[in-house]
Amino acid sequence: MSDWQRQGHLVAQIPSEHLTRHPALGAHLLAAVAEADRLGLIREADGSIRIPLTDDELDVKVKSEQRSWDWNAERWEKSMAGDTEVCPTWARSGVDAWAKAEGRDLVDWSALDEEAAR
Image (cartoon, rainbow, N blue to C red; front, side, top):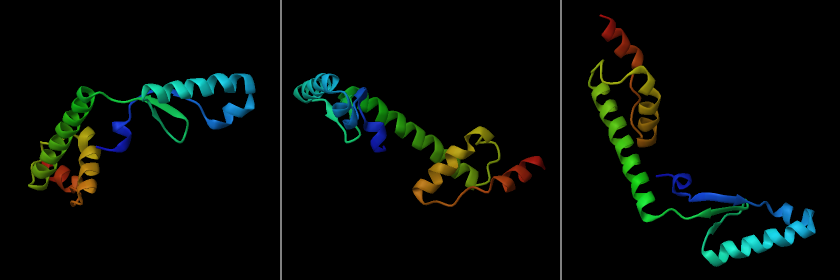
């Protein structure tokens, strides 16, 4: 699973230049940042403040990613074996992305389409 999918829930984004542009507001923003630190929230270099994902939320995401991986892998394997009906047109880009990420050959969709037309 990619890093962005592990990110917590965005609470605020406070770019550092906002802290100095308006001194009175900056003091309140700094207080918010300090409170986020006290609460154990995640602060990122771009000024984002996030609530960490719970174990249950992370588990749901991991299971969803695994289902997606399995689905794309199955369509790729069957398509590579010549099955012309296993992968709808709308799903081909996802199968191609899976194949690239896994270092596999891309399915020759044109050849499968020609075979299906016969």
